[in-house]
Image 1 (cartoon, rainbow, N blue to C red):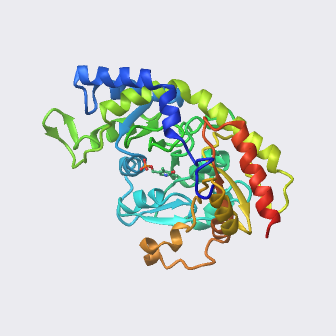
Image 2 (image 1 turned 120 degrees about the vertical axis):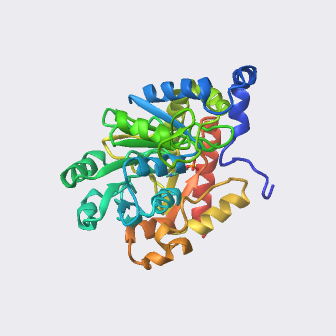
Length: 373
Ligand SMILES: *Cc1c(COP(=O)(O)O)cnc(C)c1O
């Protein structure tokens, strides 16, 4: 039985099989229209996704990383500027800041929600600060009211990193719609994934929409007229067509994820030695990741793996301790909450197609594991 996968971390094949006919039909239409880069399928999806986020505009781009980077560029973030974000995110958030020539300035996260602690923002602001990038980690919206209040007071832009939170709701507002821009990734493992790489920026600001549209298409204002130096980060027509099919299913998929997370909560809330994810009152999470915390994380991960249960760690090394960011000179102890959770977090399998019996099996194995050492 060893290393035979009984519960995978994610099962993209199962999801694909459930909508295979529609996906194949969509792909065929793209071939028939030869609309491969940008074009009608990408722009149809932009319209649908903007509506999904309750936003006026959406610009399909090459990835979630590009979505953040192009947002920063469009808002004028440049060399010498500082951008505030959190250290417990995927490295892309910081990379996007660095690729504008700006410096990422980290603030620690709230112990309960693991999202940006709004009280720590003000002390981190300098006269170089231009923007704040809160991350809706694991599918849970950050504390947007308090983040937006600080930003407004200091005249800072807010870019929502919603790459893990498609469809999550803060109070009654969809993530992505509250900041100056909202950035989403369609990496295959996200709640809605492309069959390849893709991302999107949503915004309510006409000027930002216009600027990103130009930036992501070589600075072209119209055919052969390049008014600024841009880049190529257009969405593929194929990805747009596929994502249009998947977007119709996303609300139901998110609902099932929430249900599966509730099941985990039911089985695990009273188990000593672990903490279950905590969701703030203001948040409706889309449960992209279901991460428990345990002092015995590494042993638990290993025991579950030995018993055919695939887990993950998001993320084992906070960004300020990565080699790539050594030049920031931020040693251990700089962000105690982020560092502590990096050592304790364990992501359990969660995806819309996981069965309740598989959840029960994982929970049962966790209890056995915790008793055996
Ligand atoms: C996935 C992710 C990104 C980057 O998205 P890509 O499409 O992989 O470039 C950025 N931020 C967070 C929090 C993510 O989870």
